[in-house]
Length: 161
Image 1 (cartoon, rainbow, N blue to C red):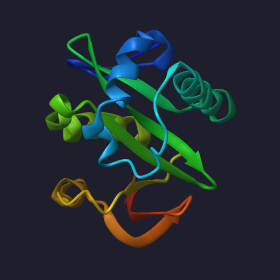
Image 2 (image 1 turned 135 degrees about the vertical axis):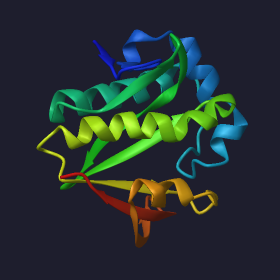
Image 3 (image 1 turned 45 degrees about the vertical axis):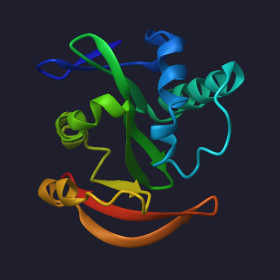
């Protein structure tokens, strides 16, 4: 299923892109620098587990993470994942596509604003992320620090309704 977001950015399911593209992306050490929960080596089994977990979110919640295409090419993955009563937005781009982050986030947030189930979105960022002005421009407010599986994150919240 393809989600046309009006332009050159498209959202599709992770199962719709070549596994090799995701594997190469997630094996890039520049990606791991900002992913404190990435403490394992990406291999075929890890990829299969990852995609199955993201697909399970779609089945459970009716929403989840997409593969993101720009001009038809895979540039990363991201989307919404329900964490308790909150919808968390995550985005993991290939390093050469980091500059698309704000555009992709704006497209995804437009979908969240149109979804009555999502009154607000949270963002969990590792402390290694020092460029945070884009979040402020989007209207996200700093909530505080939180821990996930022993890793520290900076938590932001953005009202969508």
